[in-house]
Length: 385
Ligand SMILES: *Cc1c(COP(=O)(O)O)cnc(C)c1O
Image (cartoon, rainbow, N blue to C red; front, side, top):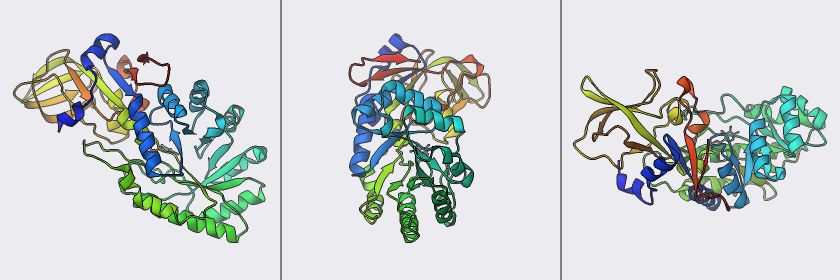
């Protein structure tokens, strides 16, 4: 691992831990800004709705609000979060394809009026709200080579789309367009561009049938680098821009980036609680693990770059373990590490997406605290549980 690149502009972790405790998540508002602006540059004219799911944190929402961002909500808790930050509900869509009637009402009471549907049962739920709602029909594009294939669980088949659009029309519903999600951390941009091409065809067929769609939501899935290699989002989006350019000019395009916006914005600091020599390996027990901030190693299938800024000495075969009494709670095995002392800090990078969001408090090990640096206007470095 190239530690030098990781160390550029790094905060004084020891000072932060002395002040705010360990384990600690450092959320850098500037990184959120940088990610949002670079994706905007890569997808000009596309309205970027930050999907809250990977990191539902108010500082991220507040920073994006300052940049005139849009938001993608899926649950009542996410509605509460954007409402509390003072986001204009017209800048939000609700993209969970399956909702209870009470969830629809909750979002409507806030003022969010655009929803996603993907089947007839869900369409029928909107008959009661047909004058107050706009709908996007989610179409499925299977992506078996991503570890997170969201089109297995959600989205109608492409062949079903026109039939559902006609049923919606017959029910008097206001379907304004299509949406999809090609799967998270989609390293191949052809996933997006092929899906856009297929949606263009559906939009054309719908037009032939007298159904005029105005909106295409190209979802999330924009990837980040987890191996400390440079990644150019403008270059990545080249085939996506090419395909978007072929859409009729009246089509409004939106996207729902989650991971891309927040993943690089969080650094996880944990401390060595204990050390044991077992067999030929040195075991280091940290105060954060796969039941905590490293939960993404289980649920999101990602492995985060680690650094050991204060360690020195002869590297030795080692294990980095989480704090709980469960044997699955191991962050990394068989790695060569310089000796670490009790209390020494271990740093996890690119840990903003699907980490704290899915952390548990198993064994009563509390979730890591946040400290926000370079946060929204008027917010000094601030801790929030
Ligand atoms: C999870 C999710 C997103 C965000 O996906 P990323 O891969 O993190 O960009 C966007 N839209 C929907 C509907 C989602 O479920």
